[in-house]
Image 1 (tube, rainbow over the protein chains, first blue to last red):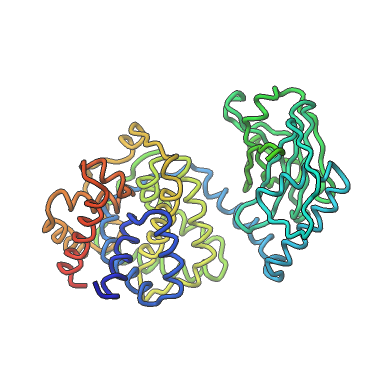
Image 2 (image 1 turned 45 degrees about the vertical axis):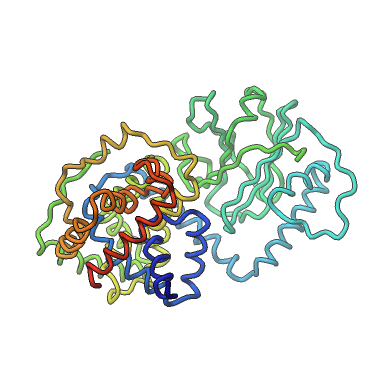
Length: 248
Length: 194
């Protein structure tokens, strides 16, 4: 098989959608570097697109456009500072903030354990002692490389929750609101209140919830108008996280 | 949720394309009102495409949001010499839907009830994409394939079937499916001559 045929087969299967996840990622990356593949993919798109005429149009939910606009607003607010910083600088800045929070709030060991899952701490000396706290759970809120980022920590025994914006900009006319979703609570998000400031951690005691409910719940943080969601449901763009044990 | 009637005359389709091009230019300049109009004119079609592949309404709505954010942010890259506006948008939508379903394959549970409501297999092709000659030619070439292979290509393209799903559906090893798909695609290419 010639190179050209090989490229054309990849392009054809890319467009058809039958490449597996790894092959598809590889093709997506390669087309950025390889004009021949990119051209071949465009040819196949052109060949196959008429088939979409067979697809019936369906109305999405009425509120979807508002959600899209809110996402665009949020990205526009966050995109600006990010553009001027290199990813490395962001990580350093985030690490610095984490260190500050670590000192200010809870035990460093638990934080280090929580962070192990999402950030490689390029520390030459690893944290020497790691006391495992089986009641301590964490959730990390981050979408791709986009801001904002939050860390949530909860002690399931005392049901005390601490949420800390790690890299979340303060927005003059907006506020972050915390939500909980759990099957036991009827699947509809329930507000846990607002995060009043992004410079200090917000603490809450969730005594109205069973530990088992909290353990399986999904937590969400949405961007809302000042004063919180007017509808009692998240209205703005949201990040979600589930709990992971601190004892990784 | 409802399926919408959308039989358009060729004249309407041409007008629509012109209008969409003008709207996309304004969207590229950051015009929110134009973006709202674009959404209003295209979201039902794109949602149909995405829902059929993802088979779950909540997931499809999530992905549709990503798609329109992407359209908003990339409108300046739209090149009217290379594709019609709706083709450009439909390609973005399909790519995003396929990316999502390939990443999440094990989680996707097909909701047959939902799909029965949404997809009317006997419906006439909706004339929203302005390419009826192209569709006729493509259908002619698909008909030239062995019936099973033609069905495989349709299921993959329209319903997002993976090789594994095709293997299960047609009771063949995955390797065989792979070979059949490749041969079918090359035969299609030769038949289409484009």
